Image (cartoon, rainbow, N blue to C red; front, top):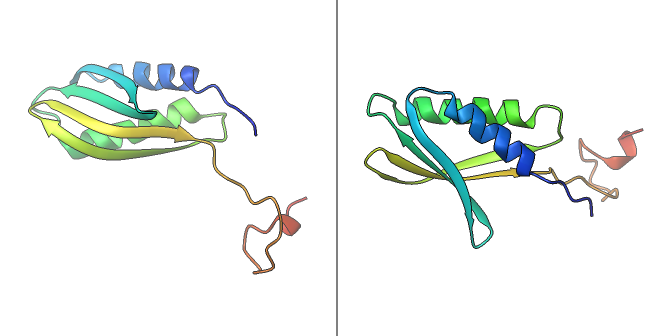
Length: 109
């Protein structure tokens, strides 16, 4: 199994998030192995706009790497929003299962 150090990706991601003037504080921490994103915003920033910005920052942080991201809203406490956010390496098929899948390993060269 290939191990990828995601720490630089997280650092770039948090740095990009911090550039938004409507975000007053942002940090992440792992709780029982699950990464959570804590974002404090100004009252004028909508949750939808914030989530769109999170996606854009994720794309920038993942550029040049074979990664995906997933962001799931957990809770809100006033201007603090908490998300479960993770970067992960996509799983690839290692053998042909015979079901004529679009991503069949036989079709890759």
